[in-house]
Image (tube, rainbow, N blue to C red; front, side):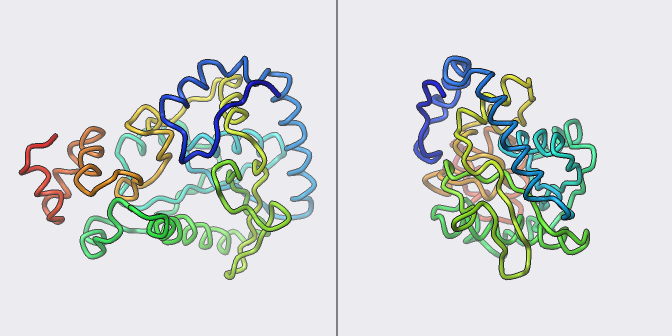
Length: 263
């Protein structure tokens, strides 16, 4: 394939991601990506034949690749699951770059909810981070799946990120009857970056922010690996001070951060 060097997502520095993108043509030639795309499109068509399928879109790099490949496979329906704790700049970006057949589902977590669930602020463990995914993405996906009468929901999940994609295959059905398929499961980080590069796909603002590639897309209080609550507020403040200022009206740690003057 080339000189692929990126490893597990959680062990890759943000600077390494930028370096990989700068040298992506050396790591992954376009001919290799074209071959990979052809196989993935063929796999999707086979897996979804005779089924009503849609894809989940987060605006993150993997879902942006999934979006284009699903179009090639004839799948256009898709959803974005959000809550009321999203970055304003990201929502503005979504308005300008959303897929043509996108449905947005808001699961409703807001500042009052966060104040009542302080343990969910800036997850310091994988368990809490997983809870965020469950109460937002999984809940919204299940609602969309049922409302649309789907047989399969395609995700941009990959093994290189340490994501679960099923046992023995890239398809699994959860306890609520939602069948999920991850056609990009065996794509490497470099292959994702190469597809984005060769197809000139614009990325959301997350990747230009502090630890953007490390954290990925997320509601702002779900920001991981901050090291501490105070540092979490510091990172969010560097992105959008108004979020912290609004949070300070309801959440003591945000108020204490502003009063400390450590911006």
